Image (cartoon, rainbow, N blue to C red):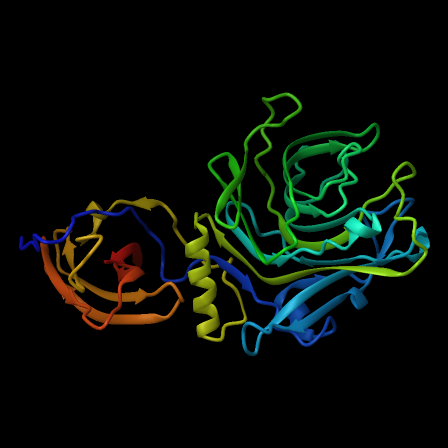
Length: 393
């Protein structure tokens, strides 16, 4: 086997998948809350009394759900979720968008959001949240829920009202007397300064949360006893909401003036039964946008996500590469027809080629036109695709 001695040799672990991956994506490119495409795609924009609330259900209204022009991305829109209130319970109205089907369980979840900090001044208990949920009745262990929740005025803080971001994973709850079974992590900080990338993964008995690519929380068992699993065991729906928590001892802010608080969402994404880091998620989002794909739901397509080592089919080397080329080694005992595709970190397809590789042999692919950087190499063959991160130095 020929080698390029000036390059480093490193084999990466790949993933076995079919040509179509089980993905869910929406960048919320809609005209308004009454756009028929929203319902046709499967979203429900709540428009009527619902929970959570205080002293009964609270109006969730379409009027609080809007779609704004994205000044950073041409021909793109942003989901806006608002609340309205005064110091009177009767003046409250909230917002929520939830997917109609319970089809989400293991895999990677991601959203790009911008939180609003105005309720820190008004002293309202706004809860701005990206979450998945199967909402079972009180005491039912089939309840499943994974939450990112931002409170600019932390009414859950036991007297410490500093703004906070929570990650919480629920096994179940009892309403009266209140008894949660969950794992919760909070960080006291103002997270409203810029757009945030929220990611959580549900895999192998653990729910792991990330904020802007950094580990935020890892949950496996309940805080209450340290043994009860909080890992979701029911299919869930994806939801995005902005609502206000209050009770008799912690009422709404004292001002009688009508006020609004708004959470914005750029996009939401899910990969079924697969793990992605932030860089990989953003590459997929950029690829959707470069192809002008505003929404996708392939959750019902058949896919395998079992781990596949490079030894099973192909090896890609050297990695990192320095000579604008890499070698592809066919490790099988037969000739294989394959297709090579490469994407850059912007999600742009920069190279593709169909090739035939002989058994136990390798070929060199010339990439002289490519600049240095990180690429995703997809090798389609034998009704599966290996995906390899490749660095060109």
